[in-house]
Amino acid sequence: VQFVESGGGLVQPGGSLRLSCAASGFTFSSYGMIWYRQAPGKERELVATISSAGGRTNYADSVKGRFTIFRINAKNTVYLQMNSLKPEDTAVYYCNAGGSRPSYPGSWGQGTQVTVSS
Image (cartoon, rainbow, N blue to C red; front, side, top):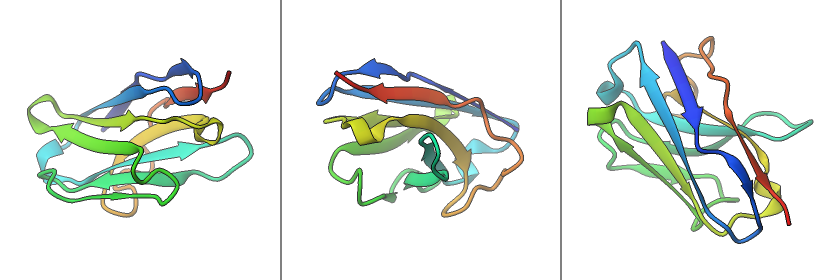
């Protein structure tokens, strides 16, 4: 099982980024997917989830209305569109399979750094 996150970078407050997570080693279309983030000195937190077919999504209150999770099962990839970014969104972003908990807790990717700063 492997997760490869990409798309992070440095962006000014109010800006946008789209993160991607390419997954392999399991039947992607059978699993919900989760985006997490971890800021320096803080625990990893759940940001957004999406069901296996993409019909159901959930978001942390802190990102609701600003972030959108979606997936393309034919590409084994889940995305996180982040708009109206705030400095408090600065973190390393990770993905994993699952609903509310990671299905593969031993298989975290390297993550992608998002820094929101002027």
